[in-house]
Image (cartoon, rainbow, N blue to C red; front, side, top):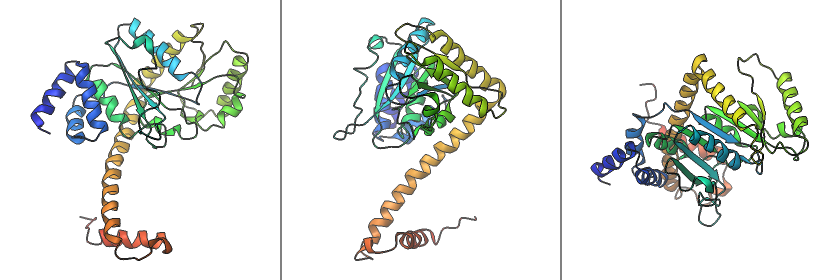
Length: 318
């Protein structure tokens, strides 16, 4: 694609053109001039913090994101939302599209919602998610929200993209101790017990706070537990305040800089991963003629042989 045309679209992005935002996101997702687009955008982004909303399916994450968006918009802030949904087994696209979620913001020009399919990628986030968040930031969206698919055991990857991680739970799905077994509790900067109008909410809060006391590691930030009800519109302002308090803590303590370093490391690794995948496919294709029945050979031995053959002339120490 012509670089001058790309530069024009990127300039339109900085002018807060919604069509340019959507177009660039689609190109990046389809791996069209992705490196050029992101190199251009990286120079102008990376300052805005990301709020990650995660938790088991059915906890009310989307409703909570919608409620938070209303609070942000009431303060005249522009909001960019990336919602990672399960993929269709046929098309690979998101099963839950942005057309059926968050209807209240569908006509708001200052809210941009992008639904993405997981496409089989573990961790509830796709490989393009961090790039899309940067594009939204480049488009002038000051509040960035990432909602994951809610797969439970594999949610740890959200830590690499979100500055503040909100773990959403709700009563009626077992006690707080059982929820901790889901393996997502360690990532939380803020706990939310949503649907707090249901019985058992206070007990669940007590269970989580007890576990926080037992696992206290001396950190200056202790994850608060907030009771919310979207239906009754209770606890939402408190949640907003806790998210803002964690934002201030990150900036004042220097933890924000540490997050940025870790995120850079992970983003570099993703680029390496793509390059290594390409190399492997080439090497594997070339190796097909060397073994009649690869499936009968030792995969460990084959891996070592292919590695040695591909990189035997590389000068890693220079």
